[in-house]
Length: 425
Image 1 (cartoon, rainbow, N blue to C red):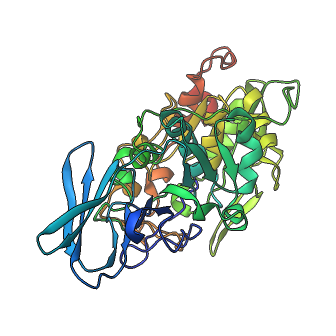
Image 2 (spheres, one colour):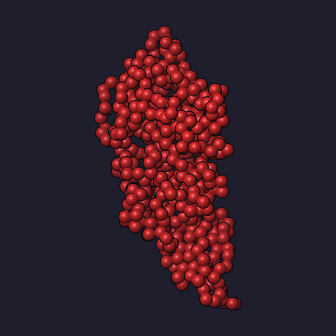
Image 3 (cartoon, rainbow, N blue to C red):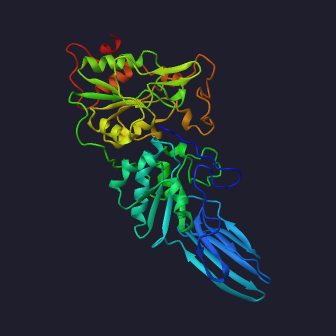
C-alpha cells in the first residue's frame, strides 16, 4: 500500500496535492450571482448598495439546512467538500420586498465533473479507481474527468471509455477547472477531525472504501479492470511473484528468517520465485532490505502493465500492505498479504491475509496514532524498545507458509511433510 498523505491546509484551503480550482465559481446566475460545487458548494454575491442577499444551502438527501444567512455581499463556501447533493437558494431583500433570484438543485447532467487523485501513489489509485467508475455510472449524463498520475493511464484507460483520464498538468493546460461544475478529492485526510473532506474517517472504513464514501456511491469493494502489456505468460514454468520492499519500516515483514523460509518452501514445490519490486535494495539508516536469496530479480522501474502481466499469470502473489499487493488484487492474482500494522479491514478482502493477533497490531487504523510519512522507523507504541515492529517480526514463517499451502492450486506438498516442516527445514 502506498499511502499518500493528503493533508488539508489551515482552515479549509485546498490541499497542495491537487491542482487549484477556478478562482471564481464557474456557473453564472442572475444578478451577478455565481455558483458551483468545486470544493463544496460555492457562491459569490456582488456588493449591494441597498438591501441584502439571503443565502440558504440545503442537503437534498437529508433535508438539513446547512447554511442560512443574510449579507450585503460575500463569498460563501460550504464546509463539507465531499459529495453532497446541495440545493442553493438566493434571495434579494430590500425593505419589505423579497424576490428569489436563484434556486438551483445539484444536477450534473451535461456538465463536467472532476475527480482528483493525488499523484505518485500506486496502491491508492488502484484502491479507489473502481469507485470513480461507479460514480460515473451513477451520473451518466455528466462528463466525468479523472486526474491522476500519467503512468496509471495506460493501465486503465482502454477498459473505461466512460471516463476521461488526464494528468494534473492537463487540468491546467486545458483549463479544465475553469469549466468544472463540481470537483471531488480522493485522499487520506489524516488531520480532518471535523470530517470536512471525508464523511467518515478512512481508518474506520478501510483505505479503499473511503473513496466510496467521499463520492457518495456504494462502498462495496471492486477491483478495477487492468490492461496488461501482453496476454502471454512471461515464463513457461509455474511461478510465484513476491514483493518485499515498502516505504516505511512498519510495513516490512520484519521476521529475520521469514523470506528465506518462504522461498525454500516455494522452490521445494517446483515454483520459480520472481521479485518485482521497484528496488532490489531499500531502506534508511540502520535498516536495509535486500532482495531475498533464491528468487529471480525482475526489479526495476518497469511499466505497470508489465508488472500486471507478471501478476496475471502467477500462481499467486506474496507481499506486504503495499502498492504491488493492490496491483496483484486488481490483476486477479491470489494474494498472500503479510501485515501487522494495518487491520485486515484496511485492505481488500483476501482469505490469505496473515496477521498475528498475539502482538501489538493495527496502529495505522488507530485515529489516536498519527502516522508520520517522514519517519521510516515510525512505531508509535514501541519505538526504541525491544518491541519495535513486533507486529510483523512475530509473524512467523510457519504462519505464512501455512497460508501459502491453503492457496487453491498450490502444488502438492512433498510426501511426508507439511508446510510447517518445510519452513523449519
